[in-house]
Image (cartoon, rainbow, N blue to C red; front, side, top):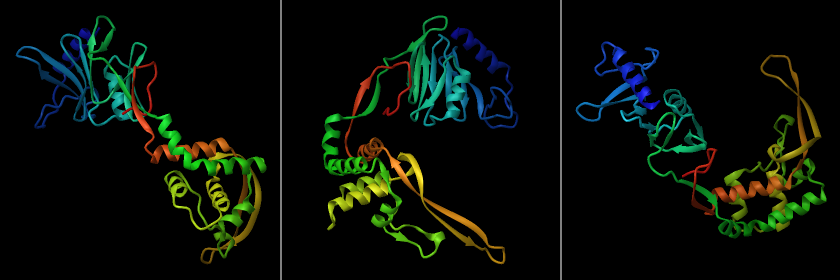
Length: 297
């Protein structure tokens, strides 16, 4: 099959006329208006050539006379590159976890920059070299040490949520975080919500001169957002009027809610912040499976 495909691309190169007026040989591989998708020829020796489907400056799919195929994505592992390789090679290609993958038989093989596939006859191919995937995973021992300073907060959060049946009240947040705004349209909590990196910095900062439980309650209130809630209920509603220029005043409503939140999501949020900021990972080698992977390096 691959030798027939080689012959097909060779014929396509020979029968495609170069675009006139160009300083270099440009032969569109399909629609002549898409001159960034071309077919090229490259000398292997004095009498043999390879033919490539080229996307911009990258020869993404190169067919060799012996039936082998070389796949490339260069420095552009994009969905566009994946679609181009999928179209011009016998392999399904997709993007996952910041990397391109191809399906070879039942295995998903990563395409980092270049991958040579040896033709074994008919529709069968295998990588020219053994494929080993390096993947970044959490080191349990390192993570256990890194999580230790966060235990007091997590124990506090678990206890508080058990007492309140999981609810973090709007009135509690007003008292703990403060309330700002002189007008209804400006009402908000004085202290903003916290996410990701900021959460890690706050939980690892030197202890302030304040009650530790008060600080933990403050952090819990600042972490309470819709992305970790299980349900909500209206706690306060403020109606006010606004007017722009000489236009007629119009009514607006601001609503504030109590949130029922999941402790497991709180814990996952804290652990995620630790994994992002602290050195808790290691690199392990794994064999290809039937699926693409995240966290490859």
